[in-house]
Length: 179
Image (cartoon, rainbow, N blue to C red; front, side, top):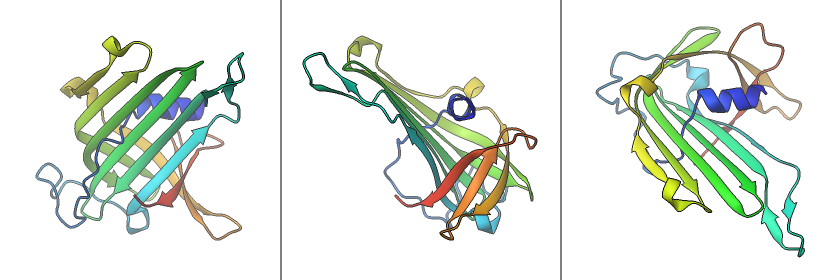
C-alpha cells in the first residue's frame, strides 16, 4: 500500500532523455536547494507483479502491473523525480508517465521537494482517444516532505529508505542507479 501511495503522491515521468550538467543550476533552483552529499545521484525504486496474464488461447498477454519511481538529486540543490506505471488488462495496456523538476532541501532526516515544472502523459492501447501529454499546471506542483535514512545490505549496497512519516515501520527502498 505504501508503494501505491508513494506512486500516487509522487507522479513523475521518464520524459527526459537529455542529461543535465550537475554543476549548471537552473534559474529556478539557483541558491534555493541543498542536497546532502550522500544523496547526490540517481535513485530508483521499482516493482513488478510476479504473475503474468495468459489468454485462453495460450498467448502471452503481459505483466499485470509494474511501477518505478526515481529521484535524480544534483549537488547544486536541484532534483528531478520520475514515475512510470503500467497496467495490463488482458491485452489493454495503460501507461502513466510523470516528471517533476525543481529544487530539494535536505536536513539530516528529511528532504522537501519544491517542483517548479512538471509533465504528465497517459497512454491507453485500447482507447487511444483518451491519450494525453500535457504540462503540469501550478496547482499540481505540490511541495512534498519525505523522511529518509540510508541502509547498507549484506552485499555492501547502500539503499535510501524513503517514508512519508518518520514513524512508519517500513519505507520504500531506492537503490543507486544510472541512466
